[in-house]
Image 1 (cartoon, rainbow, N blue to C red):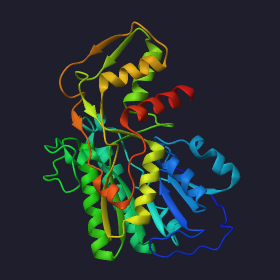
Image 2 (image 1 turned 90 degrees about the vertical axis):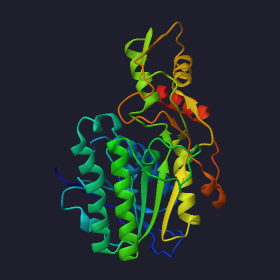
Image 3 (image 1 turned 135 degrees about the vertical axis):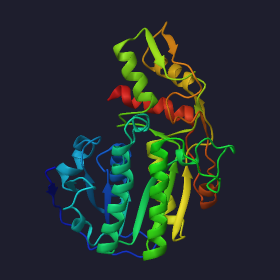
Image 4 (image 1 turned 60 degrees about the vertical axis):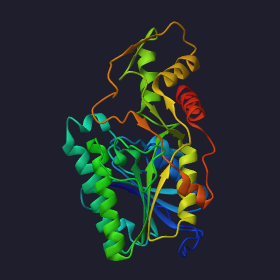
Length: 334
């Protein structure tokens, strides 16, 4: 893949002390043109960081960060993390937000190799680049699916055994283990976030997006994977990014593992009702594919405990239903 880089000088001297932001901190965001990554970039720019986005644009889009590119407030490097040639660009960075990943849980059951390459190998390559160029901190976006079919709900970070039932969940758990080992072996510091379902503006996959696309094609009928009783926690992306940065500023252990999500949940049929209502449709017939799981690797019931985040001083400002409504309105307005 061709490597493209746009360089922007930092207008303010950068300095950094552990746990404290100062302008102008140099932050690297892998996957920064994607859904969660672009929202993180928005916030880091507002915080006056100098930001380098590394993205291969397989699922992301430059449109998500176009305003920053036009203003010259971020650098952009188009590169595949599994390839070479990008590593020296992170020299001098204080922190890497490693958000790049292959998020396709369903496809991973059919073709495991791409998700293993893009999640496990890419994480290893990021860590090796950090070690080589002495970047001290990493923020990593993991997932609730590392817990598998948890028997304790809400599920705390200390829950065991961690038995993911999807290849996607396995790749995230393996990446967590790699990050922990690098922290203990090389003195790095990490924040690992196990997400509930993060939804919102710029998303291009997931249940809300999927329902909207299906109903645009066929407004009278909606296919719902599974039995519609799958019940999970959802959190709007702006709240998620706020939580991530709040914990970076307040969780001070060398290796921090934290759940991020809302404190309630919503079932799939109710999400369908919200989408139908927001689209102004009526008389829509729901067609269920059947079974308690929507696909191989689907976890039918998921609600994370966010007590550790609450002890730090953060609590979810929005619940699952409100997150869904906000997301659907944003996607319909896009």
